[in-house]
Length: 279
Ligand SMILES: O=C(O)CCC(=O)C(=O)O
Image (cartoon, rainbow, N blue to C red):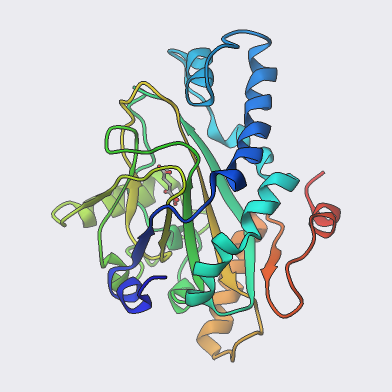
């Protein structure tokens, strides 16, 4: 499927055309309905990658307001799908938990804002380094994200740097994290990662990355999610125990609801997740 040694060396891997559109489309339909509710009938003839852009023209869209859309049966079907868990098993082993920590990002065109440089591990804090092979980030485009459409950019091998800011953590002002990371990345070779719907990007939570500007005229919809080796399914060193502690603290700060997505007992059902989920 892919070479795990390359992933460990480069800190990321792009898998092309591995996710069926049939898996993504029911979730996209949920999002389209939400956009429709927001639009109240306006721009009804525009497709998914345009309609919310027409609604927000000239205004800023707060992507955090879309987080609750990630708690539905259609999204559960994505995170538990073998098309997603299969590649993750190569990295994390057979027992895998979705941390309940994901972002839905409808990025409007020609809003020159983008998510600045960071390592996801910086938001967890010192101690997370031990989890570098026990956590994997998944970036999943719901629409094509080409070089002019806000694709991801990253610094290959930057996970070997460790955490850029040891003092950062869940309580740190993100602007400080972005500033420190941008100054570390400044003279490094950057890799753009244009992707299409159906592709999958996997990366370590120490890899420095950023979104890029979307100038395509279309809305770039994506989801990024975090998975970990299920606690206790592999031998635990003191450093790993500490790493899981740091992870728990981060998840608590985000009110995240974890979900076992594969393992000997199979994935947890949507009903089980829903029973534990946000109100
Ligand atoms: O989607 C983007 O533009 C940025 C995503 C990101 O930073 C992440 O997945 O951690």
